[in-house]
Length: 184
Image 1 (cartoon, rainbow, N blue to C red):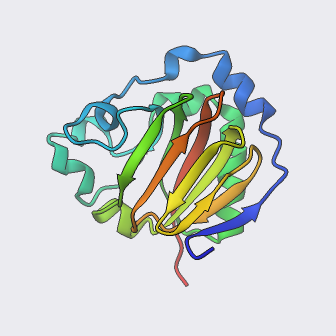
Image 2: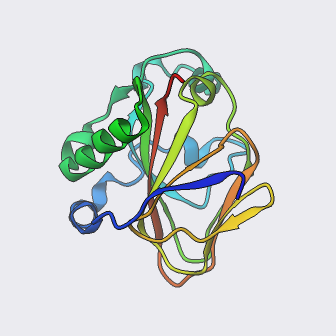
């Protein structure tokens, strides 16, 4: 595999899932990624935990301008996520925390092929998936690499190249996505 690297496995995701399942109102409070014209993300739901401040998003292009991410209210509603994010930053020797979001791809849903571009994707150059829920027929695709990520696994991957997700499983695929800046 060139584009995916297994960082850890065996993470207990039950506390995170319990918090998510108890608060369905957190999904899709910010619909920008899901509803913007030409989006690759129209078939998913998400929860924004950390991103550019909503007041700073004056246009679609604002997502790709330099900014410092802030925590959104959902962050405070999901304390078990904090432990995973801080531990991941320590493992990565990250110097800055970028965007954090949770995505849910329903059975039969997809994230269409796309490459992340712009300041945020390039400044916070290391991206991680922490798989919370999913089955064996949900595939992550990045160039010629195809992989099934299982709950409790943490992967880094190169989001600057074309990637997608195809969930042909019977259950939702839920992932915590964390971006960080690592200086080597």
